[in-house]
Amino acid sequence: MNFYDIEFVKGFIRMCDDGWQQGWHERNGGNLSYRLSEKDVEEAKEYFKEDDKWQSIGASVPDLANEYFMVTGSGKFFRNVILKPEDSTCIIKVDETGEKYKIVWGLVNGGRPTSELPSHLMNHQVKKKATNGEYRVIYHCHTTNVIALTFVLPLDDKVFTRELWEMATECPVVFPDGIGVVDWMVPGGHDIAVATSELMKKYDVAVWAHHGIFCSGPDFDITFGLAHTVEKSAEILVKVLSITPNKLQTIKPDQFRSLAKDFKVTLHEEFLYEK
Ligand code: 13P
Ligand code: ZN
Image (cartoon, rainbow, N blue to C red):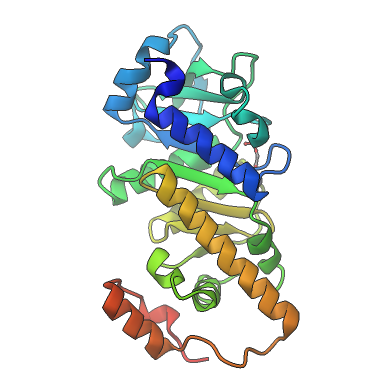
């Protein structure tokens, strides 16, 4: 099989292009990673090289020992992924201690995996454990309307979750666990990785104040759909707030409870407070 006919490779490239088309990836903004399954490794391994040198991850991820990830490159543009995936992305292998990685495919013109690799891998570790290995995708994008809201809403999980749930009836069904919010932090470092992975124990989406979102899911469709849904509801909220500071009507806590019953999702009462 040609490398570019492999299902996960096609899915990864398509998702990068989808994000670019949405306008969430100006210049080198954003990054994507995917944890390969055993089948994926079987299909792709004939294209792997073994001679690259081991490098420090900048985080300790022992539960990801010996796993492979497809990752966007640092400083690479999502816009170019569809044109030259081998220049813009790579596949890395984590060593048996979970401290180091090496490149086994891609970045043919040099470079390194995304600067957010510590955040991606720490969050993969959290999600792999929390979902019994089901979640494979971590996605970071610069969603315009979510970023705009971080200047006007309190940086609080309860407020962001409730305000975004109210903006579209399907939202509580798509992200019933809610949304976490990380205060402004320096990107690319260990501290933002730790803060985000703490929130990802509870949520599938974390907002990075004045920066973007970080989200996770089992596959490319669900993860992209999650980012898309959150950003769409943020866009509606930006429009509402631009028209008026006071909503004339909205979805009420009891209506959320009815929705949860019919759609068989659990909505935590902490988000259904009286205003
Ligand atoms: P990278 O180009 O290193 O992936 O960084 C982009 C980004 O969005 C950092 O938060
Ligand atoms: Zn970013």
